[in-house]
Length: 420
Image 1 (tube, rainbow, N blue to C red):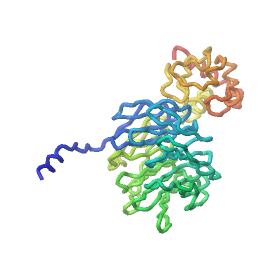
Image 2 (image 1 turned 135 degrees about the vertical axis):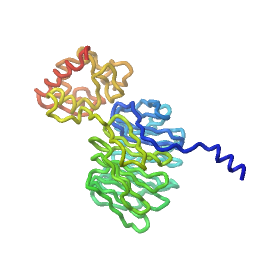
Image 3 (image 1 turned 180 degrees about the vertical axis):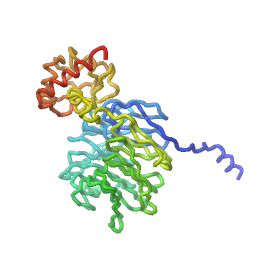
Image 4 (image 1 turned 180 degrees about the horizontal axis):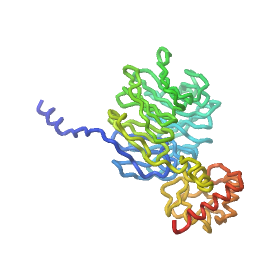
């Protein structure tokens, strides 16, 4: 008994849950993962992964487009995104590649699974041996979940299907759901034998895997973009496209809380802290927010200042409006890139393309002879980056109106000048 008392006395006291933010990214937070030791990993539209110890980040750089998903596997971290790649950290080595963006990850003792919009599921052995592919499914795959023993895998589809795969044979063995509404996210609770899925129609459904009966939860907001299960499996967190976090009590199956988490915009990522006391969330804001679950309804909302691309159009001149819509989420106007997906536009006029130190450019841009000026910026948006600079990382977009392009150029001339 004395030994037990001494041992208990040596255990660290559990701190009371507190609100906090993790700031440093230069774009929206698309994915969040937590480790048992308290570390947090954040995947961002700024092409990077933040690995946070307390509130100090280590930046994992290497992705060439937005990072959508991140997951821990002991001391190893896996991340995947819009550049079609699965990367392993530390090091950032590409260990898997699809033909479309990767939007979901799952981990078993032996494999990493990737859900891709190319309609397939990648199975990448953690020991580096030969990978395999499930599918094609006929539509994009949006999320995946392993069974605890790693022998089977659930997948969610853009076509509204929930499939079960036997990983020994590589074959689909069951089509549990096929309702036509695209399924975005999955959470499997194998201990209690149910699976939750969130769909584009704004409904979160709980499927009993024994009886095949369903429970439906909706508050009329669509689509469902994020799901997370608390470590004790008593709370299911749901994030939607209108910026709310709904907490479902999985003991009595009632909606326990409904919290407006964002000022505007969606909740893209959710994760519970390793002790279950906090809920972490990411959205359009460039920070991860973490609220104590017990006092969620009393907390302040995410993002006290709206990003420029959410400002009302009538509050901006046309040139600024074009920048806000087409450029601001990826580019800053300041002297540094602020961890954005694209390099800073400060002093862009007269600058050779691909020459900002420290930014990871595509080879096609870095090797080009483009000098940014009225004519080249106009051509970029007239033709679209995919035609003007084939192979560029810039998203495919055009500004079709000539006056809109001229107004944007005039805005940039002033906003990127040295005195700004």
